[in-house]
Length: 129
Image 1 (cartoon, rainbow, N blue to C red):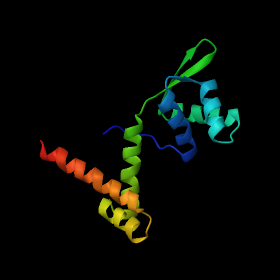
Image 2 (image 1 turned 45 degrees about the vertical axis):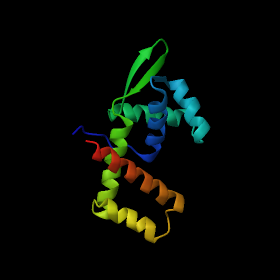
Image 3 (image 1 turned 180 degrees about the horizontal axis):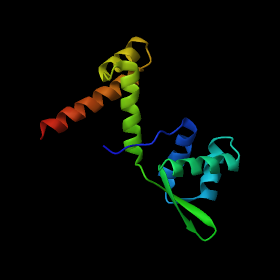
């Protein structure tokens, strides 16, 4: 399994912008992130540098700007974080997490309906194999 670097919540905000827009230049990242979060350009540039050092991003110079592309895919990162979350809080058991949400009334009727739909579609898909 590919090793995925530890990324802070703030760095994750920057990664989401890169994933959505790559390849993307420093000024473009700064512009997009600044619209979402009240950070100074230097803060965003520092996060970009950290992400390059962590090997989450790679960079190349194009004229006078740096261009960023990701070295990890978003689904890989989210998958790893999801597994770690499950392991840390629910001993790795997805059913325990879902039960917790249901018992604490954190799932709406719409959420439950959507889960049923997803599971039903998955059953039908697996049944065709």
